[in-house]
Image 1 (cartoon, helix red, strand yellow):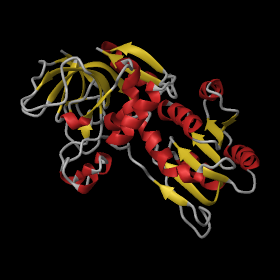
Image 2 (cartoon, helix red, strand yellow):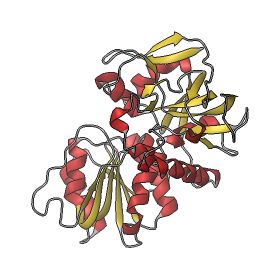
Image 3 (cartoon, one colour):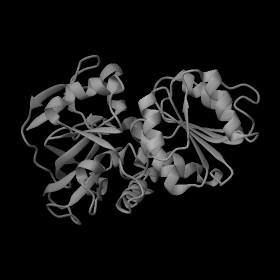
Image 4 (cartoon, one colour):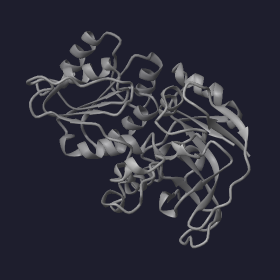
Amino acid sequence: MKAVRYIATGRPPEIVDLPIPSPGPGEVLVRIAGAGVCHSDLHVLDHGIGLPGPFTLGHENAGWVAALGAGVEGLKEGDAVAVYGPWGCGRCHSCQRSAENYCDNHASIPSYGGGLGSDGGMAEYMIVPSPRLLVPLGKLDPIEAAPLSDAALTPYHAIKAALPLLTPEASVLVLGIGGLGHMAVQLLQALTPARLIAGDIDAGKLAHAREMGVQHAIDTHDSDAAAERIAAMAGPRGVTVALDFVGAQSTVDLSQRVVGRGSRLTVVGLAGGVVHYAANNPPYGCEVSVPYWGSRTELMEVIALAEAGRIRAEVEVFPLEQAVDVYQRLREGRIRGRAVLTP
């Protein structure tokens, strides 16, 4: 089978031929329908994640159960499933409450999950080590549903934690309307009555936000002008929740400038920005949050929202063989929504 492999830091991914794996006891073989192409993959390729290659990329995966290892129950061949991405130990307190993204034993596990140390879904088949890591898709198209396991789950996890603050008179700022940001916009529209403000430096992504019904879409090229416009929209209370899906210093600083007292500043993006603390900066009562992915039960909730038609990942579909070009398109900001590779 064809597979897109991470080889070593600083090297482009390689498309290679591998044998189709067989599931061992307790494992599940999934025939991949689609694998999302995430900006986090560029961090893996460019900077590494402290785990040795080679391994198959792809941590946003969906497809159909192809074969069951000995002892696996509750699934049958042909079931449409999403693969839950962060693989924990499955035994600790966090994992037992389905939050494998915060596994207590993460430091001693030799992989963060499929596509992040273990073989992922940018291939015709992948091995999932336990059926607990699979979530039924119901009637959803697995190709369109693949990004739900990260591009929707990650913002859902961040937004769910902030829901008590997102009251009708509150303002919420979303910075970066890319793969995660375009899902965050839909999730906020589905879950909260708060005033929604979207910011980006890309005119096409701002147009995308407007197409999704965002009334306040702000060009953030000029951070001073953007901060003034956001402050005027938010009023004296300031922005109640800022969700930064970029994480660059410029977006972190902008978020810090516009949040009010008793607010929440959430940095999701991995672009290297730092929150600098001083007295009343961020303002008093501001919670700073650095969430990671989401829980298995939250993935179930995300899939339920998608099945109900409340959210939908906008995908550009490419054949697996175009993976290297697709990564370059992602690097250059030429992907609308989420790219999905199909075997």
